[in-house]
Image 1 (cartoon, rainbow, N blue to C red):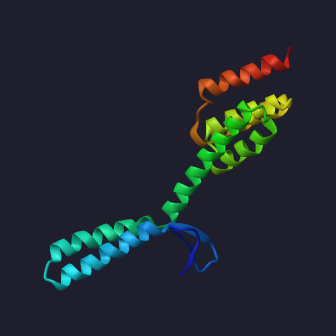
Image 2 (image 1 turned 60 degrees about the vertical axis):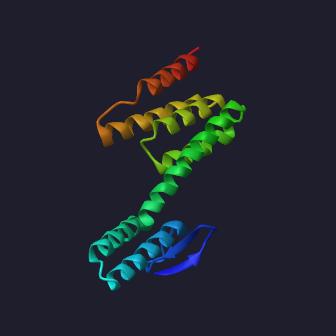
Length: 166
């Protein structure tokens, strides 16, 4: 593995396969301090305290880049959904649609993101795309979880259908 500076407080890990993953430098620094403390405690004849510090350091490292990637994905998804909602409220459905799609790509079971997409498509004058988004969610939930969309999502779908048929 090769470490490179990325942003303040973060580094980028380049793995052998060429994949890049972000990792919080603060966690790495804390893990390094704990491991150094564990080594010092062991040298001073305190194996019990050394073991506690070493285990805490390992726990920080075990989460590794995969955990950082999960956190990053979660934060991105939340930002996309929030911005999609904000742009819808500002009357900019054409901006909201790709943001909702990004959130759905990050989490295909995110009904909030699907509701943003349905609303954005409908507000942009594309009810067929809104209906298609609902049907995509319905299929995904049926296959993955054996369930239907939440009542709020079903109500939105029915509202789109009712408005489309008037």
